[in-house]
Length: 266
Image (tube, rainbow, N blue to C red):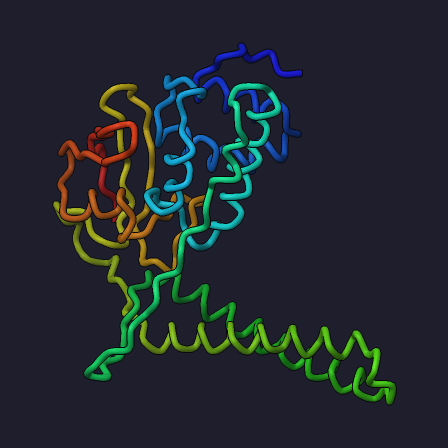
């Protein structure tokens, strides 16, 4: 049973939730939960959190594609836990909506869309593509063996292998197109005064002094577990073009969060 008081702040509620998990789950869940809490304010009473705010969280916050679904599930688990503890009258987890995918409109001039990637991100995609193609050969062999079973009426292995290959081919096409249109971010340049895509930034919270480290990358390289945020996220947009020691403001439901750019690394 959690020892957290009956009307906790968001920070206290987060600590209570993480303490209820195993050590491994706690480590895996900490970043997503703390990111959620930081967005609304550590000292804000949990009971004041509204369904409307939670419903808009995925749209407004800089959640990343790479771990997007996993992070949402962790936050839903946190909100469900809070309801069981009696910290909120309703289960706010039911209001946490998945961000709607933006429909990419075809270019009227037929110009190819470029993707910005760091050299590390480009190399990782090349490794993934090679692995996917190896797996494709294995699946083709599995399909061939499964098809040898003449009873097609209930051939579950064949159906599963075909479905898996469909997903695999889609991912192969996606990676190939990304590599084909990629623009490599040059990180060998002399250190610049202004933040740009590919830079790592150390931020210091003006109020609490808490330090955060982010690496600004293109949308396809986003990974919050490694501190990689999109240049299109609210935080990324606020940092781009700014200089060391400059104070930046990031708009959140709580208000404006202020950070000092302590260090820019390239």
